[in-house]
Image (cartoon, rainbow, N blue to C red; front, side):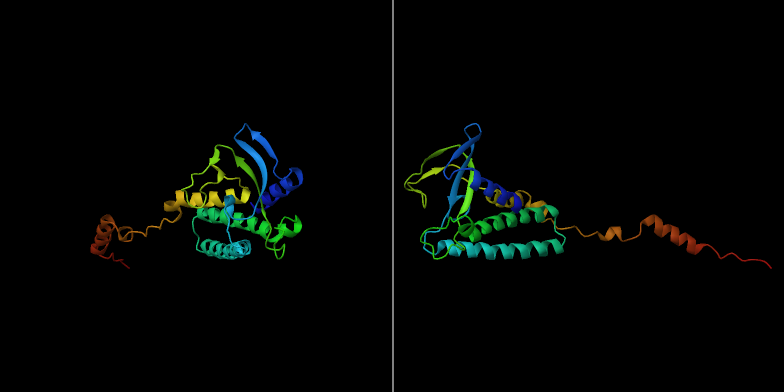
Length: 209
């Protein structure tokens, strides 16, 4: 997932002009090259140190998810759960690579950033053009802004979303506890008890010289 994510981002960077939009399937699925300074699906922190804090948070989260995945694998948890966590981890690593290195590799860090390291912008490209309009002013955070129904995203965002969705949908199966064997299975059947009693009641055979 990490390789696919980075390959798509690098291809978009070198083959599509920033801000360019290319139709893929009709008018609803497009490639639209944008740079995202914040979190997944266009969310962002507002403070001056928000980007640095976000990158460091992603790195810490990546370490904890890796440790959790390792422990779940050692415990022999459901393979579906392991794959779902791996999707989340792969998406987190994909966006961490952007935030950590793209400010240097692609020179896309903000002009006022103290250092291009850890200030890289994430490359987004998938655009589901279902609806776009102005959000009502009373809506918290996004009130008055011009937004699309589904923000432009990348492979890493989709990987994280898929991993979380799978865990929510199949949590009963993933976290189902194994049922211990009943005591009935450990006790002998009545037929066996009767047969053993008959064997004990039989006289011992004697042999003549």
